[in-house]
Image (tube, rainbow over all chains, first blue to last red; front, side):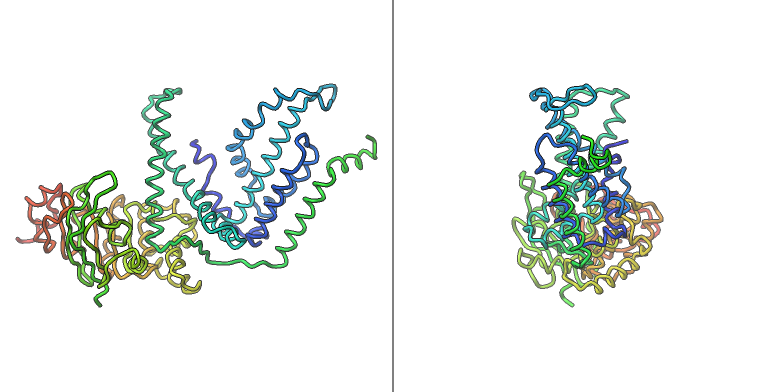
Length: 268
Length: 246
């Protein structure tokens, strides 16, 4: 299975067109709420793990109310996961100060911050992907523009997304021809990959140019126009205020700890 | 109606890397005419087509759509008048669904939503692809993609249709359907192609390009029957013409 198939980029567009209460919300309310969510998640202290857990409620709620299969989001998170692993992987080496003990095992601060990074990464990337999956990139771009994001950035975002398809398609075609001619050899020389990546870049640029040309030919002038504009309704206010309230509560109090204490009858 | 006329005068164009693709091309295509641009690979056909809606700016000479010279300022109007169907439908279909793709042009033209919807329905009906309305374009077959690509252009109600290799990648049935469709259009048509049988059926006039210049121009049957001319430019005399008495 090629990378293109594995992450199923096109699938996101199909998901974005589904009908559900979350899909019907205005793109702006979802974008703002997700932004608040990301800021809140990022604002936790570096060793925090347990207090982050209740925040998983937000991406899970969006996915389940939006009827989006979690597997396709999880797959995309996994594709980006190496990035977070690289960012956090040196923490356990440099920060060996013991901070907690669980069942006799001493946990160093490094491991705790590493876990915290991974959780934050999963939360933020998961929420962003869920946002795209239940809004559709075009509507999201138009929504962001209406929120006051300069048009240049909104269009950049849209093109970035559109060209992902282009690069994935070129990439899968190239790896296929590579596989067909590598005579079953598993490890290929680095040089081959170097030239492959270079070619991928050049071909993607050519292709992107042709796509742009086709857009210009049909009157594209930098403005994103969508067919159906959603309106900000009371449900949008409810969605925004409700979730923002929850995020603030979860930031101020460690809900996981409170629930744990309540369940164990106050034994600590 | 004079605005369906396409005139190219002494058009020259060099790519930034110094390749001289067009070296003084001139021709005039009248209202309602169907003209084929033929020539070997690299003769400058695609480069020429890209000038017709102002995507490339000539280094010398000019393109006139109707009575208006094509410049940066008039390019927007020209793009509305000249509908361009590109060689690879994958480049042309970039929206999440067929509907949105066909609606892209009308929306950019600033039409109200119900008019956009009407145009899309009409264009899809014209090419017989209404049933694919909600499908993602990248999942269609080559023939369907081509038909939808044509619909995206029709939805903009152009006066002039410009096509680059419309019959490539099509199976015989798809090609036959395409020919029927093209025959039914009253638009002025400019078709760059290697499919000379298609030219025989659709075009009344042929312009032969070679090395960035027009080397021959005339009625289809006369041009394509000229065996020497055809062979000299990487082409072949179409078989169907052998039945036509010379």
